[in-house]
Length: 388
Length: 90
Image (cartoon, rainbow over the protein chains, first blue to last red):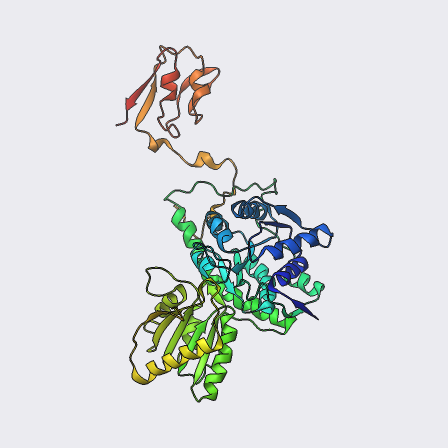
């Protein structure tokens, strides 16, 4: 095992090189441009066997990925923000055709006003498209999640979107432990599609017209596949621990066992919140953190179990769901805990368009929820954190 | 009708030439009726039929396959001898 200094983009390209996929079709968009650009260098230098397709748009990139995956290839791509939005139609096609495409998303805000920095509006908007969604906290998790994503996708028969925070992770150089090439190769194995289009002896039709007589049955299959994916994510995490020494589950609790108040966060904010938990503990406040690694499928049971002793929960949402009762993480978590917890659950919408979230910001959240646990009174369930 | 566990995943069709298994005759509002007296076996209906529903045997138009005919009326429109008449489905 080697230790390298890499930013998220280069870590993604490096993992892709080790996976050596059959096809990569991509289109550049900030902040993920470097990943595909770096990978194209590996292609040009002959370090991978990949067929690299530079498309004219993200819609075309995802379409090419779908075609390549249906043909029987192992396919990886990457996008962000407007690029993901432009793929929307094809995201559903990829998932519904049950193609195990892996696409790294480096989370970035959506226009307008135009903004290139991090929030989760892009991937949260795609949450109902049938893609498995994993959120990484840092460069290491970005690297690890991408390798695991290949195995999760091919086992579940569903596409996987490993996400991490644009710029905060994509452009920050961190210490990265990389696995040996051989270990990665062995871990991902060889992909064998069940019904490759290129198998002319056993012809298959992908994407035919589906009427009301069978469409619901196909959606039910997707529904069940997504439910099954929960265990697959866990199993692949355990298997990955054996080769990396780093364990991965659907959620990760921090100092939650005796916590009265807890913050729930995903992505890089979990790291900031962990520091805030420690400082609150030093002040005698029983604070804890639940990091959500998996957002789709939503790990309901694990969340219920992890938060069972907590009295007040603050859910951090890095995107708004305009007009809804709170952000997407909040509404799903609150719904999951309904009748399973007596906790008060409040929501903070924060960090939109890359607005920094500091340790102090999270400490303020802890102070507010501590007050709720003392008084039992909630002033506002859904708030914008640090808005002027 | 099959349940979700019995059909290929992702809406895939794994047997080629399976459209014979999907009878589209029930879509019809009007049905073409062939008048053998007027028919000259020119096969224009057979050429134009988008569904292959004109039955031809031994170089002779025998009739229409109502299992698949959707009642589009192209055959009746194209027939030079007005040998095909579109009648209301009962």
